[in-house]
Length: 528
Image (cartoon, rainbow, N blue to C red):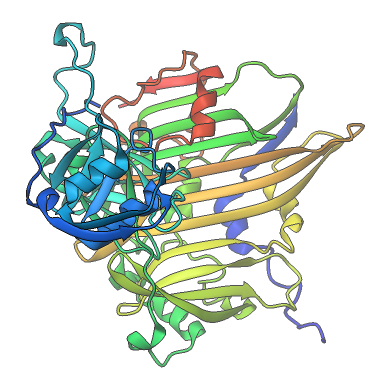
C-alpha cells in the first residue's frame, strides 16, 4: 500500500501533547442508622412454587428473585453466596420459609422496602455512653458493592446518586462505593446505572447498615428493535460536536469534586494522593483555562522507606482531569481538523441510564505512522449527545509516546510506555449534561542501565463530580485558588482512616486500602 501523503505530517498526538503534557516525572535522586428486622410482610408471605437445581446460593437467590418479582441485597460476608444449595422442590409455600431453608442461618434477618429484600445480620447492641462516634452529624452513610447479576463480578465505575440533589459518586475498580446522604433525604432512593446494564433504584434505608451487594442486570438490545438513523458514523461524530453547545451546560457552575492519583511500582503502591475540591467550571462555550480549583481537604501519602533512588511521579493534578472533558476540549478524534486521520464504524447499540446509545468505534488510519487514538464513543440515539467515551493511545504505537510522556529522566534510564488509556462519563442535570467522571491510566516499563530486571509502574488519576450547584456562581478570588496541576504540599502527619469525615470520596481499592497504613502521610489539611 502506498503511504498516504498525510502520514508523518500530523502533529504527534496533538490533543495529548497540549492537554495533559507533562504527566510523568522520572528522576534518579457513617454514622450507620440502626436497621430493624420487620415482620414478614405481604412480599415475604407470598406463596411461591419453584424448582431449584443444585447450584450456588448466589444463583438460587437470582432465580427466586426472578420468580417472585423481587430483588435481594446482602453483604456477602454475612450471606455466603458461594455456598452450595441442594435440589429443592418448593410448592406453594411462603417465600420467607424458602429463604430460611436455603440460607440456613438463623442470624440472618429480612427487611423489605418496596420490591427489595435486605438480607442482613443485626449489629451487636452497644452502650451509647461508650460510643465515640459523632452525634451531631447531619448525614447517613450508605455503602454498597455493584455486581453483575449473571457473573457475580464487580462493576467498576457505575454511577450512583440522588438525581434531584445532583449528588453522587462512582464505584471503584472493586465495585464498591460510599455515599453520604443528608438526613433530610434518608427516605429517598439512589439511582444506579452503568453502560450495558438496566438501571436500578434502591431505597437509601436498605444501605445504611453494611456494604451490601447490589446486582445490576445486563441489558441487550436487538438492533431491529429501534429506529436507526440513516447516517454514517463519521457524520454522526460531526453532529455530536455541532450539538455540544445545545446539549451541555451553557452556564458557569460549581462542582464539589473528589480527585485522587496514585503510583504503583511492581504492583505495590508507592504514593497516593486525594483531595476534595470546589471547582468553578465555566460554560462549555469556554475552554478549561477558565476553570478554577479551590481545595477543601487533601492528603498525600508515600512509601515510608525507599530501597533505591528510582522514582516515578505523576504530575497530572486536577488540571489534567478538567482538560480531559472531551466535549469542552476536543481531542483529535472529535476535532473536525483532525478526524480525517481516523476511521469510524458503528459497532453496537447499548442501554445507558434508561437511554439507548450507539457505540461508535474509531481507530487511526493504517497509513498514519504517528501514534493516535483508538476507542469507543457512546452517543444518545435521539439527541446525539456524547454520553461517555473510552479511548487509548494506539497500543501498537504507544511506545512512540515516551518523549511526549516523560518530563525528564536520569542517565541510563529507558522508559517504555505500555498502555495509556482514559474514560470519560457525562451526567444529566435539568436536561443538560456535564462531565462527572474521568479516569486516566498509564502503564510503563522502566529499564535501568546495569540492572537486568525492568520495573513496572502503574499510574492513575481519577476525578468524580460529587455535587453540582448552580446558585450564585461566580469566580473565586485568585488567593483562594490553587495551581490545578500542583495540589499537594509537604506537611507531615499520620495515616487517618476517618480522614474524610462528612465529605464524600471514592473508596480506595482493596489492594490500596491495605497498603495505606504503611505509607507516610506527607500532606494533610483543610484548605477552605
